[in-house]
Length: 138
Image 1 (tube, rainbow, N blue to C red):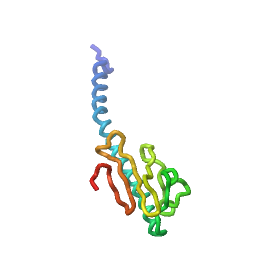
Image 2: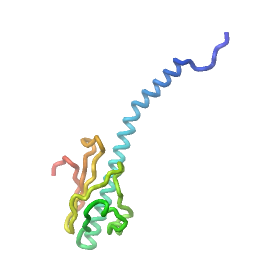
Image 3: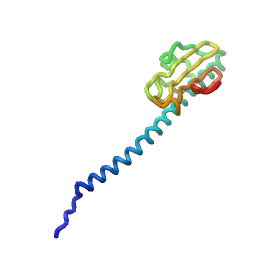
Image 4: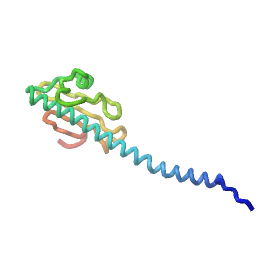
């Protein structure tokens, strides 16, 4: 009797079920890792902007004043003297926020991971390079 060398339908379905099971386990892990990496990128980007604000203050004796993030991240921003790049948006495509900006203080805000605010909350930088996560005590 001659044996057929092809896979049976049952073998193919079992293989697909195994692949689906592995994918259902791996996808949430990959998504969480991606969110964590993007959150860290967001923190690093806002840190660099805050450092540039502080360098400007040390050199000029006052902080630059901005009305919003679009102005802060424009090609005309004085911060480009102190950093190579000012990001237009966070890794999710959302604008960072200028909450307060004057010659003697500033407050910059970034939003946390969408739908994961308890793990990766919104955070701010203010004059003196003070970092604070939303919900953290003062």
